[in-house]
Image (cartoon, rainbow, N blue to C red; front, side, top):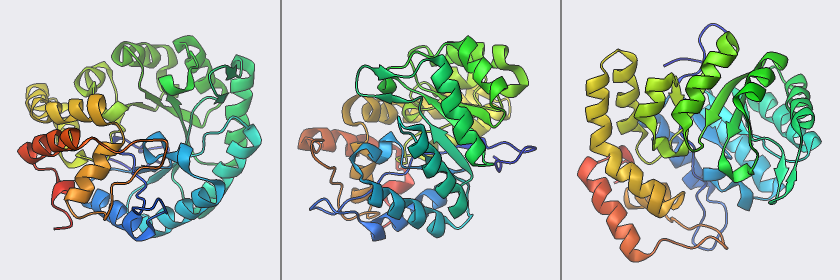
Amino acid sequence: MTQPTSSKPLSGIVPVAPTPFTADGALDLHGQRRVLDCMIDQGVDGICILANYSEQFLLDDAERDTLTELCLTHVAGRVPVVVTCSHFSTAVATARARRAGALGAAMIMLMPPYHGTALRAGETGMLEHFARVADATDLPLMLQDAPLSGVQLGVTFLAELARAVPSLRYFKLEVPGTAAKLRALIAAGGGAIEGPFDGEESITLMADLDAGATGTMSSALLPDLIRPVVVAHRAGNRLEAARLYARVLPLVNYENRQCGLRATKAVMMAGGVIASDAVRHPLEPLHPATRAGLLELAAEVDPLALRWGR
């Protein structure tokens, strides 16, 4: 599991950090530092901040700036930090990337430019968007291909992007049929695809590793239990990887299908990492029965987040 340099690309498990709030909805900066420390103790290979699972769509610009500086300063190079800088405006995305780089980010993650349900850039606009962000920083870029954007990204176009924008060499795919798309992208892009990742809480991890994924961007709920799957698979021990994955899959599935981004917060609160699992309106808190089911499954596999702060 390695650092993001040209000779040693970022790989392994790079989870998304949640953004903790106080019970009244304010940023919990002390809790954010504790989240980052817990994640590092989980043995992660990197941390992604300000992603969708970080509730980035519920943060204002000043809060983003505060969190970017806090996270990069607090991690202080202990692991690489990927900063999500997505925005429909190329100028805004570029400014975010430039600031993240100045503060010590290791990589920039971007979704294709979109706004709402209908406003999209065409392929030329998308290529220019990524190229301009790339020109603003010497950091590697990761493209996030997720259904939330509503943008259909074909394999041929993604491979063309990788060749046209040399620093765009990481691709996080979390779409229906991720494994097939990863396999096709690796074949089409060749050496330009340095870091094929999956995401979506690692819900399709085994198939994606089989397809050639070199990393996964899970949540911060149980990366300490997902990392051994990646390590075993990389070592060529697929049966052991499958056994380890089968053990945690009920919890991963429950997180993905029942809880979404609220799962990590609920487990971290139960484990004393953060004081509140609040999410911001209009998101709704977990139903008590759903929370109970989540914690029951978590107790079966005992992730570090469930006991880190006790």
